[in-house]
Length: 599
Image (cartoon, rainbow, N blue to C red; front, side, top):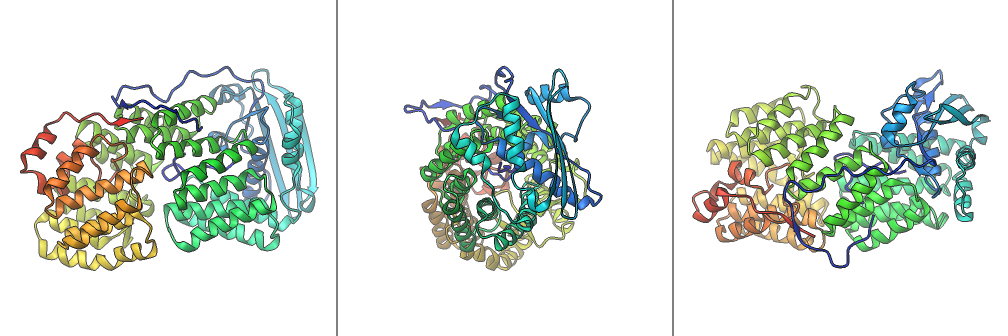
């Protein structure tokens, strides 16, 4: 399975778009993600983390990799219901409370295992347990040389299917029995890559490490199709979240296509090619086509369904997307990604109550998630109008935790909401990074953030010096990724602050041209929000107010950042000050907030 990304991820989803979708309004009291749970299938199974019994603790990656491979192989069998690793990774190996865990995961059966690797010898022990009776349905030990390890996951999967009376079709049997590689060293490198790719923190260096291991595996075995597929997916993830470069774009496509040349029915290959169309090309019809092919090959891989739903969401099919999340949550109730993405959907629809409920459920499962804590604070701010919840969330985060500067950015942002430039400067001073990642994903030089502080303080001369210092870096982000709409929009806002009106309007227009709402409702709405702010800062007051009025009812014209358009943002943020004396803007601020409309 391709593990999706909390905060990153990757926003994902089951594709049955309504032929005649109705337009409804977000009320804040609509149906929540919780769905009526179906009966627990006797053929449902969760694979708990495998215990690493190796004397060398660095071999933990091998135990995790074997677990992942078994889950992936089981996901190819339509007669089973398989819980994702995202839902099971929080549990310990061989726990004592199996019935309780099974109830939480809504499964009838648990697979436990242990792995011991010593040099080139591997010992794997697995046992299938019926959770409510503690009956051992099947158990097996495998003592192999590393060169003979290939195919163990297929043996395990077929034995489980036999024990649970799940019949494999001829196509499923062929997929399960296909060996990915016969090179043991390539296989070990591949497992190392999977471990880094599926880490929960979503750091750039983890994806880069994964890519390096996949490259090394492919160098040893150029015919290793799953390694090509995962290398492609990693390139797409880096491209989408961190470095949208042409080289990564080409790498993602080349590796996905190579995986399918080697193995045309490889589900991971179709998923990787779908990710390429989704992330790099924003070609959602082609992405859906590939995801559908992936779903046929991986009928139990919940990630595929979530990606299909993500496409629906970007196409504006919000009702279908919400229904897909409910279905996914009923099947896999402790999947943090499903709960997070569902919450983000309600957030985009300004359904604050359901968004908060979802974030609270994620925090139960991931209480230390920095991003989720911060975003929950923002959602409460959007709903109730006070930035106090954001401050409370920031206060709960240890001082030494600041991945990519996201905590610093939030401290800077909330300080300027309070018109407290000194506090904003203190936040910047405490951060060692010279470039800070905003919630939009655009890297912002500290000089840009300092220039905004200078504007709030009323020191325009110093602000212009700092904006000029930041300009080359922001222009380079556009030069490096000329198709990056949000980067053009951010550059346009810089020019607006620098009083370069013509340049500002050109960049904002280019952003909207690159990514219209008709093509991508999520990022398309964000670049239009940037454009409204550019209008406001360049004296185009009529255009700014007209656009704000429209975007207040548009899904996803909201963000955990300064371009967000809600009544709370408009009332609080200094960026909108040029509009404050206009009676039309004052009427908007008087409320109530209009309903967000969607299909």
